[in-house]
Length: 249
Image 1 (cartoon, rainbow, N blue to C red):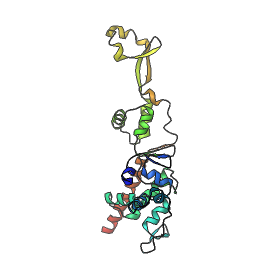
Image 2 (tube, rainbow, N blue to C red):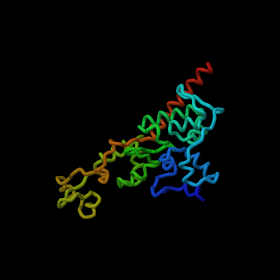
Image 3 (cartoon, helix red, strand yellow):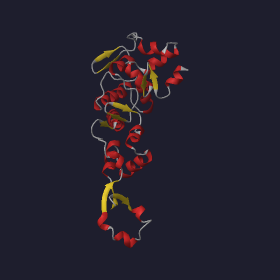
Image 4 (cartoon, rainbow, N blue to C red):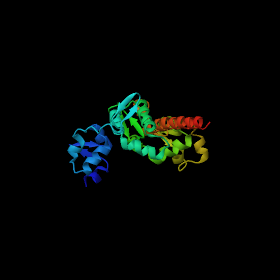
């Protein structure tokens, strides 16, 4: 029951609300897989999150950047990277454990994520230091529907979500200043003939197409983390491909 509850979002523990189970584990500096394993062994959530991890032994030791670690899990723990996440990416990419692990090490460095902060999933974006699995909460805050955003993003060819939002900020549309208020062409056509509209040319003004975006700064503290992740991953895949070609020659 507890594990099922933890799979839902958000999670509340000790009166604090977390966006996800992984975020809660990050707060306590423990791998999500360890918490799930402990819960499955009958631990309370309190003990699963707070009891110190025992050393695993040296039979599965691994080296990374000249340092030896007693296991792959210990290596992940040292760098604040989810072991389960690394294994998951190994199933979808032709890379070995250390190659995938290095992708995440580079990723954390690129987005300015502290080494001790646990990375448990590939976030869509990072805003003011906070990771988000999806852009949807951001769109909700700025008053833009996901349909409007993605239609604009793909139509204009943007890859970076915040560049797309800045593009939307700059979009203008024509309106007519009638009695001190902007009125759009589609509304005026219901009241005026084409000839009458031509007489209103001097009243034309440019207004924001997306006015709810105007009070937001998408430069400060905003980072398209998903784009950065795939840039690093693709670079690593290219490295692997080049190595394979050399070995085949």
